[in-house]
Amino acid sequence: MKWQCTEAFVAVGAIALDNLVTFYSQLLNQKPQPYQPGIYAEFRLPGLRLAIFLPKSDHQGEFQSTNTGSISICLQVQDLGEVIRELEAMVYPVGNIITASHGRELYLYDPEGNRLIFYEPKPINH
Image 1 (cartoon, helix red, strand yellow):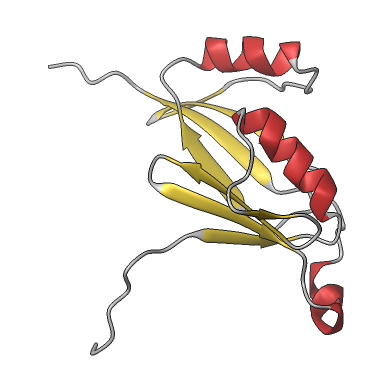
Image 2: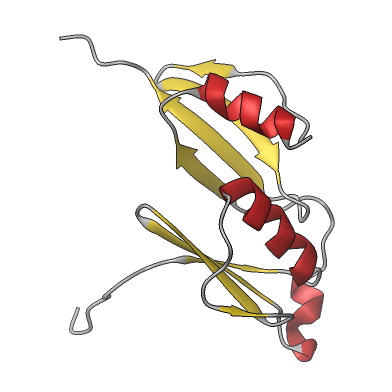
């Protein structure tokens, strides 16, 4: 491969851009930066840039929400209990914790139906 990738990020197209920007601003407790109202918003997390954009009018049919989003965003956390308390305080519906072989997970869905996975890894026993 002759070309080299310098950085990768997740970009989510949304017709209801303002609704999604409000959701992620509250969830992540940060304002988007850069931010172009009605056009583009970007959130920076450790190891990830999350971009939300309004698709051009001739592409909007590809992004019509059916409340069945097509991506999962995984956010590793240290304490799922703390996440649950904060989500409940923000009045977000919280489901059950799922125990997997690699740790515990909690699912939440954004207004476009994309799944957020809050992941607490299983402690490593030495």
